Length: 299
Ligand code: GTP
Ligand code: NA
Ligand code: MG
Image (cartoon, rainbow, N blue to C red; front, top):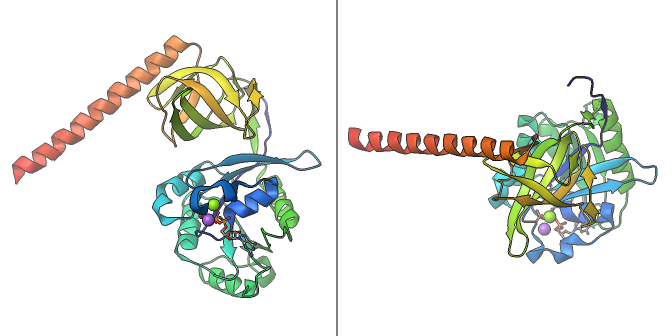
């Protein structure tokens, strides 16, 4: 129904940039945790999601993305659900191939960019060079008369990280981000994995409404009933509102990252929708196989 009021929601911010430019370290500093050291070889292999709450209660949802070039499609997915992109560029390295790629993704999805010029604590750091290089790509700093915010930071020492958060929240305010809080949830699957004990585990971002334990849900060609839900710190939740990333149990099969999910009236309906979608998908696959065979016979 239309009587459901839209209320302000936290911004969903994707952190992008070239490999090893300091995305995860920046988020670690923001979260005061230590994910970078726990990661295999120090390379981020999935989209991590976390919520940061400032002392005044304002929240920001962050998505970490891998900088390694093998993860192009994952990164493209990160841009689709986000309101703001923080482009991390190491001041001792400058603009690199995945920096350019990140800019292209953000632009393709119309996501405004804030530049975090990182590693300014390093002796070889040259933040002005980063400004010059990005200006050539059309990201002109505000202080040069353009409209892109640049913040010089050190993810390692924490220098200027609070200023960066302030700019993110300022931009979020300008964007007037709102969502419906009441009613059935919908959103996007950001990752999924099969757990030996727990079965399919999916990380979802709620974009509209409130997701609750017990909700029947459809995502892509699979369905289920939310059996348990956890926040980014692993705490059990009963419900999750807009911009909240949650890990959920209860899907029959693994949904795919990038699938949208919706809550429906009951599990029967959920199964029906998923089955129809599955059949459609199989028909399309058959059709495209058939077309490929036709191609073979023509030759
Ligand atoms: P990928 O996820 O692999 O793309 O890398 P990333 O961008 O997340 O970089 P990560 O946070 O893993 O940092 C890479 C290296 O740079 C690590 O050794 C960090 O300790 C170091 N580093 C990150 N930020 C800073 C900084 O501000 N100053 C200094 N001196 N080192 C930093
Ligand atoms: Na890294
Ligand atoms: Mg990383």
